[in-house]
Image (spheres, rainbow, N blue to C red):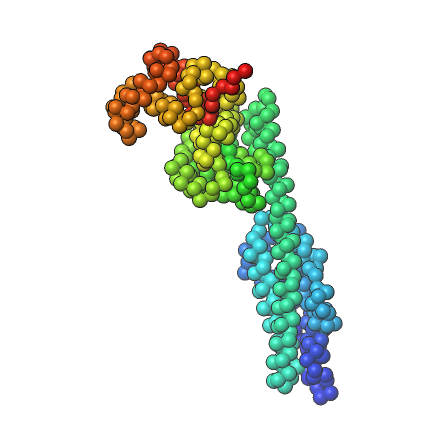
Length: 422
């Protein structure tokens, strides 16, 4: 209980003097009041239920803040000279390192402010001051205490957020190093890989590459995090993610059963994030599958950035698997496709439409009716375009049909244009 000398005639009744008397009264029992306040924090705020080491730091933080407030009131220290006490700053950093919420920390400061003002009012009551002096002094103490808390909180927010960024970056770097070791170490056995990642690799894995386009806004990390969240929502499982570079995340969805991705939902939701792009590998199992599905996603990304469809937000490896095998040999593929297609490789609008029609026609197993239905055009239009394409090729589509199909696919998915002449 905070005590104070009973008001006597001749005692100072100026507000500053009474504020000093109250501060000195609180200082006489600072240890007991610190224990009372920290016990309240532990009871009311779950995040304050620490182990012994962090609990001692919490007590030191509380004590240093209470001491600083009492010194400010007793010595009339200017608010301009108030800084975050070292113990309080270190406790805020530890709070961030343990991934505890900033909101919980700030709530403790507001609860502590309220409790301190209650102690001050108790001390004032024991002085039996005239009502006017008591009210004026209470208002002054509340105002000064609130100003102290506001100023310290402003500094704490910067300390917490800076430490959170630093700690996240260090944790991400360590996790990225472990994942890369699992991906790259030859002869690594399953048990060792699982120990390194602290997760089971015996089930199924589905990898994705998440990146932002060049020239995207400065909040790239937040966008990449949003992309990982969208991927997790579409799979129903939170992904393991690492930062591959400043603009790229690698992510894995892992489960005991074969992962199922709601690609329609993912593609729709990516519409709200125009800077994001995602490619997805094929599901695969075990340690080898953990590695293979990432390679799939990487090849799908190589296809996605080749120029054929730069605005496509989501690309599945299963859609571009063949092109993914060709993407590392673009000059040779372009030269070969040019030999197969000849002038059907031209990049004018009419020729591009002919290639698209031939692709659909061949996929429809040579059915003009089926191809017309797929393209929403008249059957005669398909017939005309196919005959025109055969004229350009110089032979029927049934001749070298496989080569034609692969060359058309390469043009469509890799953005190939005509081979340049010598």
